[in-house]
Amino acid sequence: MVVRNMGDSKKVKSFTLAGLMFLSIFLSGCIGLDSSVDPRASLQAYPLSIQEGETVTLDATDCTAVEGVITGFKWDFGDGQKAETVIGFTTYTYDTFGVYTVTLTVENSVGGQDQISSSISVNGAPVMNLTVPEQVKTGDAAFLDASNSYDPEGKDLLYSWDLDWSRDSDADGDQRNDIDATTPTVLLPTNSSGKMKGSLVISDLDGATVTETFSIEIISRSFEVEWVTEELTFTWSDYLEQGNQWEDSISPGEEGRVMEFIATLQLEQELGPQDNFTLSLLIENDNYKKTVQTEGGNITANETAKGIMERDSINPAGENGIYTADSEEELINLLLGQAGSRTAQGVWTWTVFAQQADPDSLIDTLPDPDPGNNWDLEVIVTIMRPELTEITFG
Image (cartoon, rainbow, N blue to C red; front, side, top):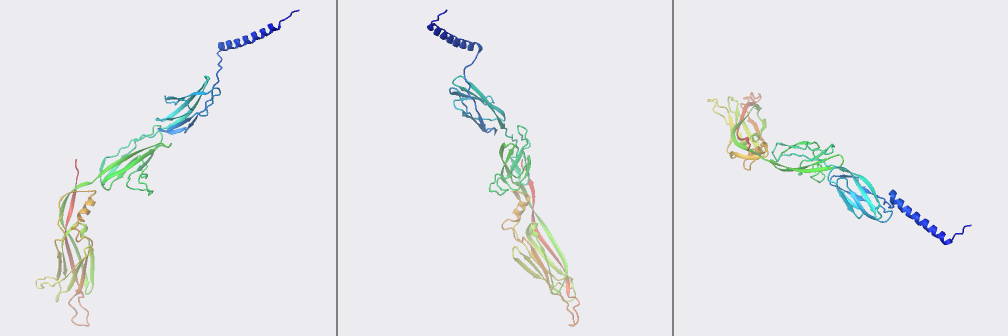
């Protein structure tokens, strides 16, 4: 029979528990068991698709420590740049296109850590290569070339030209948002001198745009002007019976500056009393009216009846020299339209009226053997016409 002491039993139990604890700690150290507890990482990135130079927001405020507290947030932005924050929130700007992986590492106070990643797509902006001439002469076309522009990711490009900021071609109240052309190159006509400003917007199919403005100096043309004297001759022939009239119009001022004119109305020679015709002129712009009648010539000298109308020193002579203008047509109009030199421009209306056509019948009951007469009208207008020679400098 074995008698055990109760105090010895308690000692055995205490020794056994202590041994188990020691063995547990020993074994834990031997086999590499880790008693830390990892946090749970959470990451929201927005927006996930951005343009070059734009900023993405990174939100890790939903991360949980699980045990202890979160002691830090380590950010790897995927482009070689890293950062650490004590709060779960940050922003980052990507300046170069590409796809980047943002990795967040979260640590807690008991030594645990967790990672989470998100992908950010950065769209590259088009690269604009625009060539524009600094100067062109009025009337010439300016060649605008953006055909060497490209998208770094190889995407197709859209071109929007606003060719003239001084015009609102779409009538929306904004002169700088028009779309006047959509091709990579433009041949831009010029009509008047001065500065022409515009812009080009190039965009890809993913919302990236690049804008460039341009300015072109449109310079006037230079001409050497020499005034040349010319005669314009107009002739008519017809037959008029007594009491009838003929009418026609000319516009000699369209050819040059009117200096003088002489008009001669001549009737066919007849036996007996000379016929009496009237020649009239109306220049509408000047409200100029003049009338002459034919006068009988010397029959023995075979002179016919005629009427002469003439006028000289109508306008001052043109001055030779060098002039500038946007076009040859503009300069001609300017020279012919100078103040004090516009007399006799417009329509000239000539009228021939047969007042009297003799001889009448000798017997009242018999018809007039010659109720009218043949006539000829010659009008000679002297003008000065500017001859232009364009001058090219340099």
